[in-house]
Image (cartoon, rainbow, N blue to C red; front, side, top):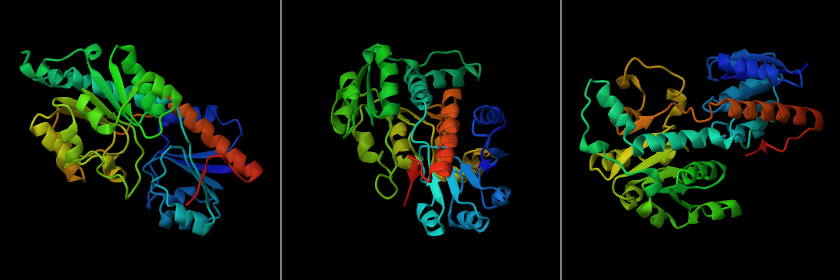
Length: 333
């Protein structure tokens, strides 16, 4: 029986792993994300399954290789947490989940957008302090009179666009390689036009280290429509925090909603005694900008359908490579 150690498995997720284990893998679950401190939990395993923000660096991969582990897969779409070159050097195969329920992230992005668009967070923050007055800052448009801009209209962006379209919003999109379906759903425009027109801008582009850090910078924000809402459920590295905070301070942005932050390995999955203890100054500043800023802890994919997709495809990846020597979802340096 093939033994697999899976890191970052929450107790609520374990029954799904067990139920979907049609190949009868011998599973060991580790609730914590993979770190240098808990790497030894994989000793005796034939393979390892991780998730985003696990530390899959050369040090841990060398430990795995020393124990004879040949397969280290991730149940996430992104794989920037995986050292592909180290894996190649050590003869370790890697694979990912190329996609899961697009509604998971799309629904959260939509929720963040609507919450800030209708100033719900501001209103709740006030009533929690027993303040039931209605300020000028709560005055809002209605979504059917607004324009929503989707930057990157792939599976996630397309699904979010459908949600806004169903409520009567005008949807514009920017994507260098739009699908035919995207062309039918949204009006395709260049990025400056999208930014100038949109009351809500939602980011759904992949992060390419060394290429598109700080995509959302001062120039990007200055091109946005005054009073617009910005949503980022892609990657924290895409957002220049000082530029966003400046946009909020001068009123050019009315709100920023994000499910992702910088330095996630050091932050996501951890609880801190106070905002001051969060090990990233930019994230501290964003937290202090509440109620104009909404932050969720990278929970976009934390839904039942998305989890089932991740587990099912991960199990198939292991089965395929163990029985045929390859998997369609392999990733290489």
